Amino acid sequence: MEAFLTRPKRKSTHVNPTPEPGPSLEEGEESTEIRLAILSSLYPLIEQETLLDVLLAHNGSVSQASESLGSFRPATRKSAVIGHQRSLRQYTKPATARDDGLPSQPKKKAKSKKGSTLHLYDPEDVAEHTPCTIIHNFLPAELADELLRELLHEAKSFEQITFKLFDNIVSSPHTSCLFLESYEEIQEQKHSYYYNGGMLNDVRKLTPTLAKVKPIVQETVNEQIQTRIRTRYPGGKKLRHQPSKPWLPNAAFVNCYAGAQQSVGWHSDHLTYLGPRAVIGSISLGVAREFRVRKILPRDAETNRSDDPDGEGQISIHLPHNSLLVMHAEMQEEWKHSISPALSIDPHPISGNKRINITYRDYRPEMHPSLTPRCQCNIPCVLRVVQQKKENHGKYFWMCYSNAIPDKDGCSFFRWAEFDEEGIPIQRTTTKMTTEVP
Ligand SMILES: O=C(O)CCC(=O)C(=O)O
Ligand SMILES: [Fe+2]
Image (tube, rainbow, N blue to C red; front, side, top):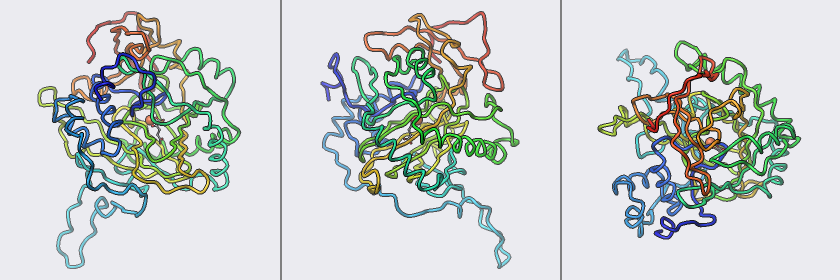
């Protein structure tokens, strides 16, 4: 443990958080997230909420938390096997009048209390309690199997994404690869787009089946966006900074989780190239795994408490083979997600112990790195949003990326990012620069 924390440089340390191009660490929260990730990589069988509690009990000291966890082995842990269907509709539907004329039971609000995990299987529950919608049996069965076979073949040569964490080079505990539509876009991607401070070496052309499935995802996601706006958003109106124009997926980021222990830590996906209020269409194939989400509630600077501790628990959405999960426009700014390690999995007839995930993404032309600010390191900045602090909550900002580049220490560049109603960046000629991160 100490060796891990203090060793000056280490080739590939296995750690749990933020691979790319999806995830982004939250501002000012890096240390907690990263410390949690380190603990999580050391104790993969202990729930992240428990690890967080232990970490907080030791004032954020990983080594002390690790010491007290040293002999800890969870006595019992809920089975990770995907099984029964539990619906929350009984709690959330308005109660009907009683036959005996007595007043109806008050409507119970299902909450995900801090420290507990609410397991959701039913699409109506998912839409009600999370910023996602799920569609089961999304593709014709044969097409889903064809896509799975094709991507299992591709995944044989996928690599773990490595990035810099303090002075260590660490790698994500699963493999992935980015697929684009044309060779021009691949070249462009390899030479202009930065992720965690570096560029992607392995970018491939969409496979025939990824290309065939793309318009199906596009149509469904656009329908789902409209339904979401109509049924869930205030006044039935799109969110501020959410584009009105249709969602056009032009990239597919494919993840492969080989075995129960492969995972991805808590993160929000980078908005740098997707822009504000990004929507993502995510297909799951092969082994069913748990997708966990939790809302980031702003905290009071003095008490470090949120207004609604009952809203902070984890929600687990079960993602079976051939399901489409739409992460809606409120997701990346306000929630975090993860694929937690599982104790056990049900093998899939085609993929064995593997799960393939495809996230179709709309890399927006107005977010091209040639149009976004560069910091003093001459590298395009990363776009982030204030998630935790009440002050400036929801505001976007650009900051230096290169802290994540091996052998580079980065600079203190910071600039508020402004967007119009449609989420298009507003270019300013004069810029305010400060070293203070909100
Ligand atoms: O595997 C999944 O379902 C999620 C992957 C993810 O969060 C990402 O690629 O950003
Ligand atoms: Fe993600």
